[in-house]
Length: 126
Image 1: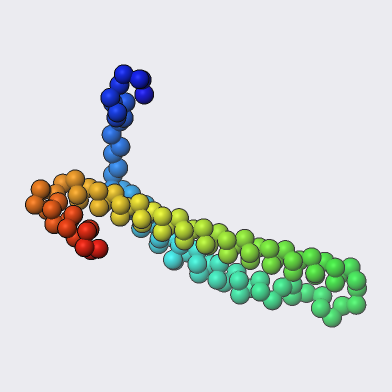
Image 2 (image 1 turned 90 degrees about the vertical axis):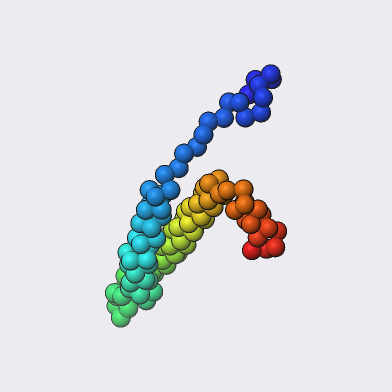
């Protein structure tokens, strides 16, 4: 901003297509609920037992490979768990952004009497 410009003079409007944003948010939520969570849960079940080979073999090499493989499975489960948590956080953030934009749009299109009711409701904790 130039020194002589009034505050906000260089700002541009931000236009958000709320319907499209809502569709993206819903799609992310659906993907998380119907695909990611069930798939990760299934993998957890498969990986939690560790390596399923060579337990009765006397070979130290096989036991070393088995141990290393079990460690890799544990790290994979940890990463999948983190991915699931981060995906949930992303969906929650998208919902919060959508809610805030919807709230701002509702306030912007409200009449003066509607605004008075909104302000009174906010002041009363509602």
